[in-house]
Amino acid sequence: MTERRRVLLVAEAVSLAHVARPVVLASALAGDHEVTVASAPVFDLCFRGTGLARESLESIPAATFLQRLAAGAPLYTKAELERYVDEDVALLRRLRPDVVIGDFRLSLSVSARVAGIPYFALCNAHWSPWALHDRFPLPDISLTRVLGPRLAEPLFRLGQPIAFRLHAGPLNAMRRKFGLSTFPDVRYAYTDGDRTLYADTPALVPVRPECPAHHHYIGPIVWSPAMALPAWWTALPDGPLAYVTLGSTGRVDLLPELFRALEDCGVNAMTATAGRSDVASPGPHCFVADYLPGLEAAARSDFVICNGGSATVYQALSQGRPVIGVCSNMDQFLTMARVVDAGAGIALRAGTAGYEDLAEAIRRISGSTGAAFRDAARAVQADFLRHDAGEGIRRQIATL
Image (cartoon, rainbow, N blue to C red):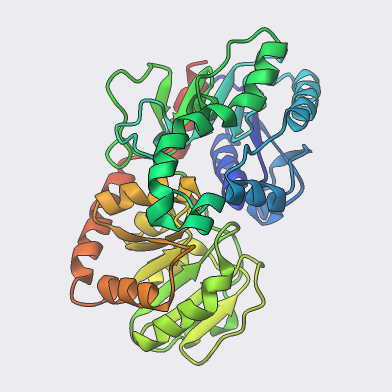
């Protein structure tokens, strides 16, 4: 018989994905354990129909997070992390969970240790210091926008190790304050935990053999909102179909050019704006909603166009659909790098992608070369089917 545990999952609500993943895991654990999810009161769509117990916890505004990402600046200040630690510790001492699981709640690296609670860090393996592929792509930061990718690339290569150390600075200051060791760079901050749980598969995002034994793959965490289908769902025209969503962090200003490229390539589109754009349908080939059930939309489509983040990319691949990732931040480029390696998608740079780039990618993935992308996506789908993140997290809890 499974021993019933008190499990607290903490979501850093700066993007939909960081809330959705803890909700999926909490739902998998809820039948056997006493489960609570703590997050800021945004992205409530993730909780719809779950009945999960909730606690409110501060997060910086998503807009602030995105501005810092775009500037290539550290994502948190020391003052913000100090507030986070105080709030975390108060919550941990009040609830006294047997374990706390955090999704990008970097302050738990300090607060869980202060409160004496075992801490599981949920992350993607491409951030692991032991990732097999350890070359970091140039993101769309201020340097890239000013100089252009060709000139920015060599400067980024020179500055990246220093930048990674600087990004760890605010958390290191907090750790020193509490007598904890510091991190050599931000990868260690992102993956620090008493256990580190990779929401990937080792085939798609491998790590080196010397990766520590407390790092574990639990498998892709795939979430889709519980919601009614739009009225136009049964009225989609015949022909190739793309599911388009740029999520909570993508360049929604690219949607008009994307719609034009899809129309010119003879591809119909169903689009979820995540409530971030009031763009109207440009014609009978394109259907728009704030949100769509992503798994059903991906399954119905021939391919998916997204911001390259793992949430939608893994939705698409779980249904055997190839992906065009229109990427801005480092995390998106890293996710798509592995998808491109697998042959299951195409990565574009959002900062420079125009009509011609979008149209060429659409022609490649839907035209005569599309079969190779589809075959590769189905191979990744088969790999995903060998993993169950819900079962993976249950196993980790059982060994406490």
